[in-house]
Length: 223
Image (tube, rainbow, N blue to C red):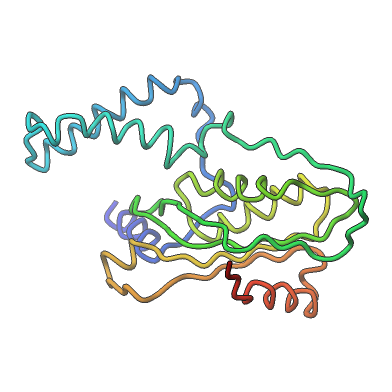
């Protein structure tokens, strides 16, 4: 039992992912949103009381309900299938055959090992295979998969896989550069470090195409 606990701690402290799919139970969607909020509210209240906080204080009395609503509806909203963006595609009538890059997409996610924020930027690109997707849908796909307990490697892979399915092409790439508060604010407390992950599919595995994409995301865009 002790060795199992040590192994689990090592996975969490070293931020090691174990699956490219989010580990969701089969019965994850049996409870309604309101039912989940009610249960989590009680759990948060218990945590705060265990820590010795006085929940009769005006500033704290509403915290369990606020946290529960935030967990279910906001920061873990990506666990709700109905929130998945409907990424409609369109025929590439203008025959644009070059790379399309959406860079500096804001990422707000949560580390699944310590439930602390991951904050950064995602850069996504694809080469059309006859269809295109609305630009905002790329941002929404990033946000959907970010809004769940995550490891950055999995998030990067999930973004690419989703766009590959939507666009019916392997020619999709993603780079994520983010700060992990579980590294910055606890443990080693290295406030300067960030983590970079990448996933390249299809033509982006070729050196020249990959280099073109990486050069694009280096561009200093100012308005």
